[in-house]
Structures are given as structure tokens and as C-alpha cells.
Image 1 (cartoon, rainbow, N blue to C red):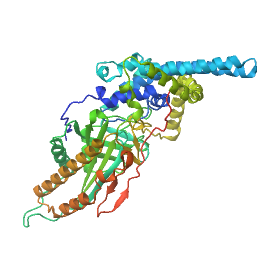
Image 2: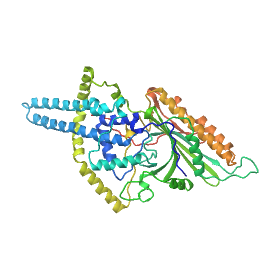
Image 3: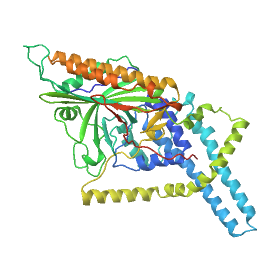
Image 4: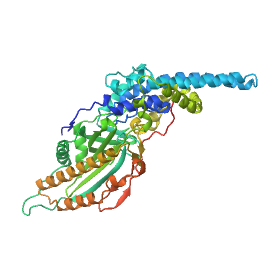
Length: 485
């Protein structure tokens, strides 16, 4: 079975708006940058979450550059803390020292923020410069080695997830449906039913979905497996002390389609990138075929736009005005207490990086050696962390974005049902049951427009067989930090 991959328009992930805004995010949020470093670049035995339309290598390199700049600010803040402490212990003669410490602390926060908004790297992140700008270089061999691991995951077809939601990196589940069909009733009496396999139907669906006239669409087969289940499976973790493979061959995917397993599940995946990567809709389609029935399952996920704060860089002039400087000065004063509290963890995380990696390696090797188990699932998705939503719903910035989700869902749904009907007829299987079920699913689906509430929040529900609706409460890997430098 050959892979099917169709891209109707060529949008480079490295130059996409999603990559650019995610790079902006790690420069504006210290905690996000630290999370990228600690949960991706310092975890050589874990899978790396892939997100459509995002160049994870560029984001990771910007996270390292942002962290190195932020640690300088934290070092100055730590010095001002020491100065303020000395002034307090020398009260009242030390009051001038306390005042001086406050001024230095504010200046450190202001200077770092100014660099994030108008520095050399910030200049390269502007829309007119980003496509031709190079990411910051990797500072050491350890980062370079892990960057190669991140790069391999970006082009792989294996998702090794952690937790409940298997569609890590693709956002949150927005809806879906499933049905089971009887394949023993002939369409034309007297003619034999032609046997078929899940691999054959998968190829037919792949070809038909790839033919859709939708820009920036990718159709491919992807394997989803939980990281807790792969450690002893040499198909996915050849070296027990290494990372899971980012890619599996088509023969393995075909075998898993023919003989399904509980823990390793292949899905035909449709990814549609909208709004230059700010919006990504995905469909995951699974087929199970046996002697008497066909089971079809679909899940739809959505990566929503970014939080509004990350778009600030597009509103900044190349050279700041006096008003912008004053606003930055005010924001720096407001951020000062939080920045002071975070400076000690920031400094320690940077200085203890080597020890932390050694400690993780020693701990992991002990677990693998003595317990013969290890969870290889990805810890973190930067794209989901910076998105303007969670498992409870998403918030769009424009009404047309919500309409686009509705449009692609209906188009793909219709093509899936039409393909299934034609395929069953070709095999002389009665499609009447499928037609009834498809009408039920379409009629019982909530449209996106009816789900919009104040502020653009949407909450979709599953359209289940028979018309019952269950709330979508799937969990997703999210980043809860909201602090800014």
C-alpha cells in the first residue's frame, strides 16, 4: 500500500503565520519558552508532538534564544533582590538602596521587553521579514542533537501520545460520528458480493478525499499509539533506551488495518490548513472490516487561532513612538512583581540544565532497567498551549473562521458518505442502510453557526449513531502558564 499525500497548495510550515506567532509567543512568555526547552529539548526518549503548519525546529530554536535573553533579565532581578534585602536589613538608612533596587528591577524588565518587541530577533519576526529570516543557531551539541529528533518528528507518520486524547498536536475534538454496516446483503439479487479489505477501502477514500478542491489539504495515513504501550514493542521503540520511531512503513500500517490491534490504530488523516496556519481542521477516519460488517469512525479536531496577545507584534511600528514607550513602561511596572517571583526559578532552571538532564537520564535508565517500562508519550504541544481555546471550546477572532470550520466539515462528510455508497455498490453490497444512517448523522449534527455564543466561543458535540448527543469532554495537552516577561 503506497502512501497517499496530496497537497493542493504549498504553504511552507517554516514560513507560515502559525510558526511566526508561536515564535513570538516564546519570546513574550518566559514560562512557555521554559516549557519548550524542558519538555521537548531535554527529553530525548520521548516522542515530539507534531502540529500541522508549524515548523517545530524554528520554534524550539527561538525558545532557546528567548530563554537565554530572559535569563539575563532574571540575573539582574536576582541582584536587585539582594540589594533590596540588604536595604531592608539596614532600615532606615537602607531605604535609598531599596528604591534603587526597584528602579533597577523595573529597568531590567523594561529592557528585556523592549528587546522582545523591537530588538533584532523581533525585527526578524515581523511579517515582511520572517519568510527570509534564519532562526537563531543551536547553542550546543545537546540542543543540536535533539533538534534533529524534532525535525524527524515533523515529517513522521506516527503519533505517540500521552493521556486521554490520542490526537495530540491537532487541537481538540470538535465532533465526529461512527456507524456499523451489515455487508452481507447484496445490492443486486443473484449477483455475488465482492469481498474487500480495509486497505482497499482506505485507498479508495484516500484518492477521493485527495481529489477535493480544497487549498492546503493533506491526506495521509497516520498511526496513533499511547506512549505507555510502545516500550516493549520493537516496531515502535527499537532501542529500549531510545526514543520511539517517528515513522513506520506502509506495510505495518496495512497489517494493522487488516488485523486491528487495541493499542496501535491507523487512521486516514485529512488536514486542512486555513488562514495561513492560524486555523487547522483535521479529520481522523478509521475503518474496520470483518466477514459480516464494516465499521467506520470519524473524529474531527480543530486548532484555533492564537491568543490575542501574540498578535501584538503586528501592531508595532518599526521604531517605537513615545506613546508606545510609555505604554511599555507601564506594562513593565505591572509585570514587575511576577517577574521578580519568577527570577529565581528562571536562573536555577538555566544554571541547573546540565544537572537536570543528567538526573532525568539516570532516573529514566533506572526505570527502564529495573521496571522494564517507560512512558514515551509526548509531554507538550506548544501550538495547543498558545491556542485561544481548550477542550471546553475555542474562540475565533473572526466570524468567517467559524464558517470555514462548518464548510470543510460538511464537504468532507459528504465526500466520505458518497465514496462509501459508491464503494459498497461496486462490491454489490446494499447501500440502503448506509444512506439512512448518513441522513441521521447529517440531520442530527449541530451546525457551527448555531453553536456560536458571545465572544465567538463554540462548543460542538458528537453526533452519535441513532441521534443521541454526547458532550465533547476530551482532554488535551495544554499549557496553563499565562505570565509574560
